[in-house]
Amino acid sequence: MSAPIGRQGRRPTIKAVAAAAGVSTAAVSQAFHGKGRLSEPTRQRILDAAGELGWSPSAPAAALRNARTRTLALVVRRPTDVLGADPHFSELITGIEGELAPRGYGLLLHLVAGAQEENALYRQLTAEGRVDGAVLTDARTNDPRPALLARLGLPAVLLGPPDRAGGVPSVGLGHQGAAVEEVVRHLLGLGHRRIAYVAGPADLQHTRLRGGVFETALKAAGLRPYAVLHTDFTEVSAVAATRALLEAPDRATAIVYANDSMAVCGIGAAQRDGLRVPDDLSVVGYDNLPLGRWLHPRLTTVDQQVQRVGAAAARLLLARCGEDVEETVLDDRPRLVVRESTGPAPASPVSPVSPVSPG
Image (cartoon, rainbow, N blue to C red; front, side, top):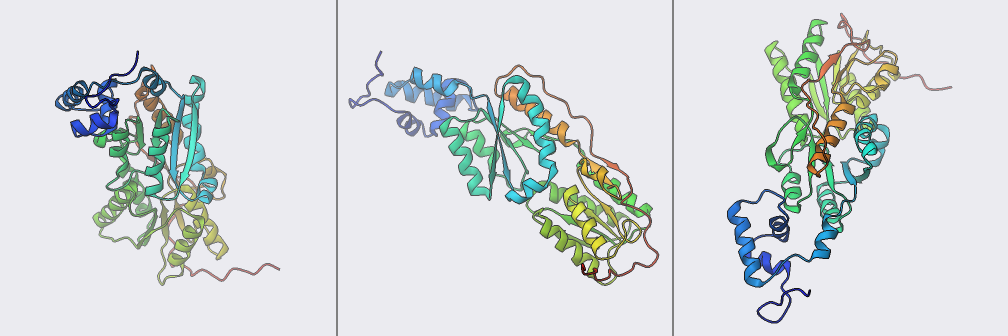
């Protein structure tokens, strides 16, 4: 059966319906397929406009749109060298794949350089029908992605502290601030008073949250942070931040890093400059990756159960894609794991010595 002919002799289009109803084409599609979060008045306005124009979805096109690709996207806004060097993402992907593979789903990994490239990628993936849903990483301040994905009608979950605002549910351990308070109490108990924080990019939500708790916890003890330095998570910036802290007068006696990879870089930089960890400098990471147990000294860090969070995110996204999967309840919080990289504050901190030239 041929498609209806509009009033002016031409076949009506979804764009014409969208224009008549004052909505996007994605909203028109959602109205006819029962998806999205359209209000009932908006849905009815769309259906009325479609009826007036004599438009209805093409059956073959609808079947094509509704066919599952059994593929989910993981988009990471990081330089390629960071992704390759940071085991955090290996742990995350392991958790996600552990849920996808047994159900016949695949993971499509994309690296992007910035916000515009990431947003354009979501539009492209949706337009081409290449994925059934997406895992969003790095929740950001004034993040435009949840609203964009909602408009596109692409199911998604956001990795971060639990928060259902913005149309995209977040998946992660709650009470993130409690772990930072635990770190500060641990270092204060060891006698440290010059405590620095090497953070990630300032626009990340976890950077602001952890940094705020870090400052508040020190303030409660009558102290201020020795310094808070922001990085892009690369090895170069981690080493540069560490050396800046260690070369300053009355240098820091303890440094807290936003992830384990930067903490490992920091330990290496301190040791190359002649400092002993933890005798001269205490170091704390954040992630509890396996590499922290392989170091000497072993890394004191915060366990945020990266694999478990990845698995929970995958299960929730599968459920949002229509699979019969129970959601995983993450009812724990990040916890400090004390190992050998933290110790009593030195009585009189030594200055780093120039590294010995090889040969």
